[in-house]
Length: 321
Image (cartoon, rainbow, N blue to C red; front, side):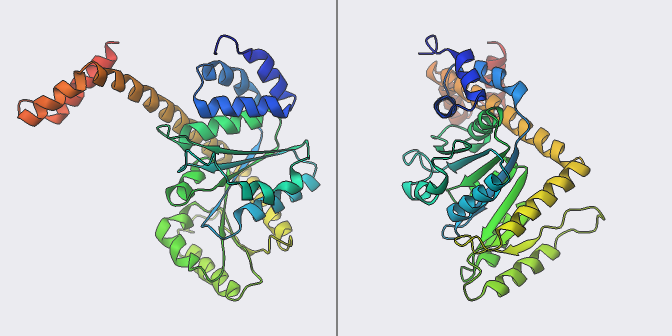
C-alpha cells in the first residue's frame, strides 16, 4: 500500500487545497501509515502560518454551534478555515458525531472551509501526536485559521491547550461550570472564556464567578495576558464579534511578547516526545514477544532482580538494536 502511494502528487494536491487530498492525508495520519515520515517531511516547510484555536468545554455548552459561528465570522474576513473535531476517547465514532456536522452544514459547500472529524484510535499519545500532524496538513494546505474542537471530555479539555495557540473555554449558565472549571484545571488553560447561551437565567452570575476566579490567578507581571470573560448566544451570532476581537488581541499579545513561538516550540517538543515514546513502545512490544520483558518480570516476582535494574536491562537492549 505504501509503495503505490504517490506522496509528492498527494502533497501537491493538498497544497492546492484539494479537499480529497487533504482528507486522504488526514486519514493516513489517523491510521499511522508507513508513509507519514515522508509526508511530514514534504509538508513541514509549508506549515507554521495558521492560527490554531482550541475550542473546549463541557457537553451541552454549545461547542459545535459556537465553532460554526466562528467559522462564519472568519469566512466574512475571507480567511480559509479548517475545523478538526477531535474525540480522544472513542475509536468508534470517528470523532464528532453526525449532529456536529449537521450543525456546521452552513459551511459544508464552502470550498474555503474544511471540516473533519477524527479520533486518536487508541494510539499511544492520542491527541499528542495525531492531532499536531493533522493540523500540519491543514496548515500546509493553506488554512489561515484552524479550529480544534474537543468532543471528548475530561483530560482532553486540558490537553487541547497544548495543541493550540489560543484556547477558548466555553461555559454555560446553570451548569455549575464555574466550580467544574476550577476543579478540572481549565481556568489555567483558558486564554478567552466565553459564557454561551447568555440569554439564559444565571449568565451574569456565571460571568462574575469566572471573572473572580481568573482574577485570583497570578497577575503580578505587568505584561501578562488577562483572559477576558465574554457572553455569547452562538445560535443567533450575538457576541461573536467580541470573541473574534479577543482572539485577535490574544494573537497580537503573543506575537508582541514572543509567546506565540514559545507555544509552538513546546507543541513541537511534545509531538517529538510522543512520537519517540510511541516508537519505543513498539520496540518494547517486540522485546516482550521475544520473552525479554516477561523473563525479567519473572525475576522481579521471584525476588532475584529489582524493577529498576530490570528497566535498565530493557533500555540497554533497546540501545543495542
